[in-house]
Every structure is written in C-alpha cells, then in structure tokens.
Length: 179
View 1 (cartoon, one colour):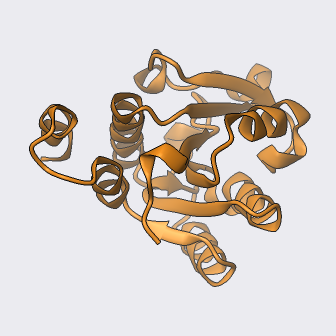
View 2 (cartoon, helix red, strand yellow):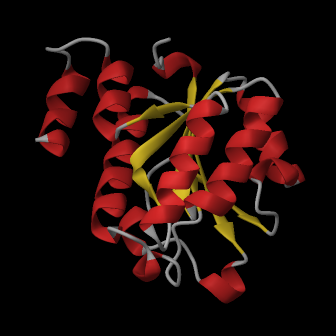
C-alpha cells in the first residue's frame, strides 16, 4: 500500500518545548519532522499539530512552528482521537491515510494510532520522527504498532511516496531537504 499525497494527512503529536529535550535523538526527530512538514506543505497534504497541556509542557518547539496551513490544536487526552476538536478536524479533511510523527511514542503516539486504526484509518508511523525518553519505550511503540496494523516508515519513504516521481518542481524543491 502506497502513501498517496491526495489521501494523506500529516499529524505531528506534542513536539513541545519541555518534552523535546528529554527525548532520545531530539535533533534527528525535529529535523525529520521539519522535512515532513515542508514536504506536506509542498505537495498539498493537510497538517495537524497537537500540544498536550501547553500550560505545563510549553508550546510546539520554534523549529516546527510557522508552517503555512498547519493547524495547531491543544489537547488533554493522550489519544488525539479522544479529543472532540481533533477528531472533528481530522474527519472533516476526508482523508483515509494518516502519517504520524510525535512524542512520546509509547504514550500519545501509541494511543492515537491504535484509536485511528480502530476507526478505520490507514496509519503510518514515521519511526525516525517519533521519540520517547528511552530507547526501550520507542522500540516497544514501534513493535506494538507494527503488529497492530500500522505501517512503520521513515521520513524519506513518506516524502518519496508523496512525490511519486522525479523531475517535478516539488521534487527539485524538496531534494535538498533529504540530502
């Protein structure tokens, strides 16, 4: 099953100021998420970013803010799908594929992904743009979601599947982000 730009929505979960420094490989995670956001914008994929209890955990890190068209939603539930505003926003986009990146992998990413699969979405978790405080938690997240029906992908897999072919203006614009 290919990831198709016209069927996708990118969801970035809780990459916030007080969470990021505690994560495994935070620079890699932020860099790859920036690539996903820029690519989604370029190919017309809607983007939703969440913030878990921003009064306590801070806002989305500055490196990821300012992407034109990105919708930012506050939440309190660990599963984004339990938040009515998020669920309505996602449903209103009319897309069946969800590309997930986020923090913490073993909490909010796992619960969101499981809920989305239960509700019939085709979900792809971007392993190199998803993090937890410990490597064990990250690995447990990926293993659980893999057997639970999620596709486990990398940033480059998503970008090249969205692009579909070389030589286009979008390909030329995004290529420097991947090299």
